[in-house]
Image (tube, rainbow, N blue to C red):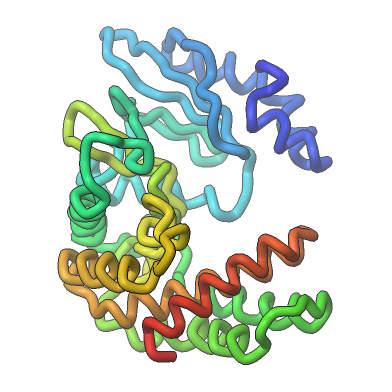
Length: 305
């Protein structure tokens, strides 16, 4: 439990986090013994989970993940079980009540965003292939939240935060984002199990397949929800002198690879970026939210909104 471990520093900020951290050493020992693991030092990464490499009794390798109980983590085991290793790491064991998972280990584990061997286009194409695998699984009857219900809640939360905090954000663009959060799920032509947090740091190089997804926040709903963090974070397209042609090319590339309309992917990106901006504002980080709103404006212009 190094003091500089991100999960320790982040969870120490709240009463519920501190209570969970107090229980964490006993949880580590419990699942180490239950699953007969030999644990390595914890991995530095993640703000609400303790994660460590583990050696299995048969000599194989795995990762033990113990997560602070919260809503977004509740469906992780169900999602991994649904995918069965097609696009994401295999689930080896789980205690969902205790938020404990034993999953396949990715070796070498290089993040997609840190990979210098391949061009951005090649990495986007590889990630799109993973999404196609994830989306091919039939959604389970129970165990996962509905995306439409979640984004309706977010729409109301965005409105409340805008009214309460009154940040200097474009109210018309915020209204567009709110409307998209409510209406996009209703116009979906198919429903899949979305990853929910498909950013370049959650796609790792592995031995079984070139890349595998980790750390999902799965829900059942519109696949167009998923690509936003991949498309806007990989290789920092907004840092280009003129990001518009870079973004247009990348959205077209991924949309074609996953069989979706690029304008729909852009619309979801606007909705999610506006929601993210108001989250930053609620955390007291109004300037960061303003940067998100600038990105939302650029995406909305590309989408013709």
